[in-house]
Amino acid sequence: MNSVAVIGAGAWGSALAIQACRAGRRVTIWARDKTRVRPLPPDIEITNDLPGTGFDAHVLAVPVQHLRAVAARLDPQAPMIVCAKGIEQGTLALPLEILAGLHPQTPAAILSGPNFAHEIAAGLPAASVIAASDPALRARLIALLASPAFRLYGNDDPVGAGLGGAAKNVIAIAAGAVMGAGLGENARAALITRGLAELARLVTALGGRPETVHGLTGLGDLLLTCTGGSSRNYRCGVALGRGEPLTQAVRESAGVIEGIATAPALVARARGIDLPICAAVAGLVAGRLTLEDAIVTLLTRPMRDE
View 1 (cartoon, rainbow, N blue to C red):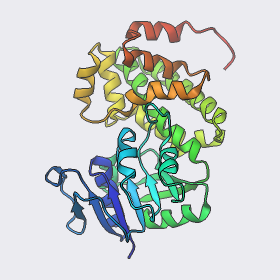
View 2 (cartoon, helix red, strand yellow; view 1 turned 30 degrees about the vertical axis):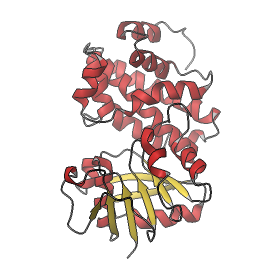
View 3 (cartoon, rainbow, N blue to C red; view 1 turned 60 degrees about the horizontal axis):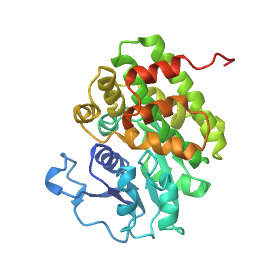
């Protein structure tokens, strides 16, 4: 039996701990406050001390903005699987870039895809991706976490996978705002499709592969996050579309809204790449644009071939 340390006991970390247990692994989950951890199978050990040595992998399920502080305290001997989606403010670093700076000799991968935590925890069928440049590492980590109902695919484009996970949260805020403002399903479908085009430009410009955009970490995750009512980013966008202030929209969404911090960081990282939807969301959450201004900005862009 292999052993897995899950770092972070929120909804996603808890779901991945349950999945690793389901896959037959010995699991320890780290929580800052053990008393607030949701019920887990009795085989899963809960600790508020960061796990030490002796694990076959560390699964990092903490928000991107806290990833650096937590990862810096981990034993660098075990491979690390990042499950956070976003870009670090200030440094504009993707999750794997954060880990590479902290632990340059430690193998690392991204787990990303169209997954809601509560469905993974319940054992419902799902698919996701382990993205890493090393094929042996991909195979090893897939074997560690996969089960018949949780199908894992390998991908050798961690840049594309990381950018897909970041951008989809931003585009989901925009998709929610469209629906909250009563603009209709046609408008949301158009926005998601043009958001996919933005993501393709971004991934290609920053060294990823365009075909990654059309897989689980791109199109798949984008569709789920922009249409599923369980998406916190989408729910936040709906509230903004109804005219609620950002603080209230965040509170009602009940969780970390990664797209809020990611939007300005993504636009800054893009360095002039045309990302009108992401730029509109960045302006909206920063208070530089009203919802009406953002809509007008997008609708009055020059006509051109698709």
